[in-house]
Image 1 (spheres, rainbow, N blue to C red):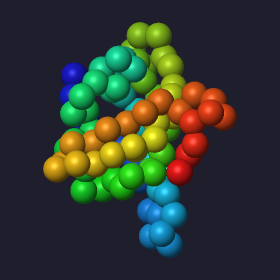
Image 2: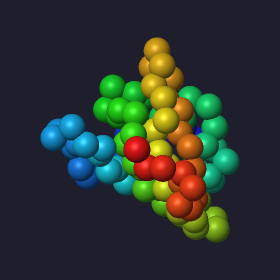
Image 3: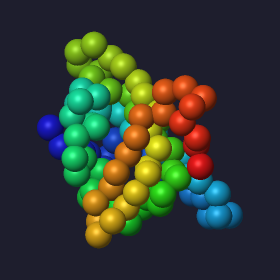
Image 4: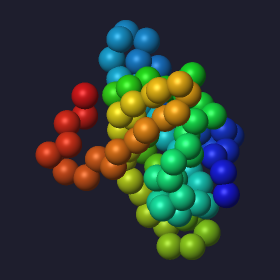
Length: 90
C-alpha cells in the first residue's frame, strides 16, 4: 500500500522551533512504512528531528514504532527507528 494522508495527524506543530510530534495509523506493515520514499508525499509537512508514532498492520498483527525524521533531501524523507536510549531524539 501507500502512505495515506488521512491517517496522518500532526499533533505538535513544532512552531516554537522544537521538534513536532505526529501520529500515523496504517494497515501497512513496518517493512512497508520503513521502505524508501514512504513519507515523501508529506516532506513539506515534516522537518528533521520530527517524531512519528506509528501504529501499523492493524488488519494483521498490529505493531507500533517510533520514528525520527533524520533527513529531507530534495523531497525525499529518511526515517530511523527509535528503539532505545542509544538513538538521540534530536
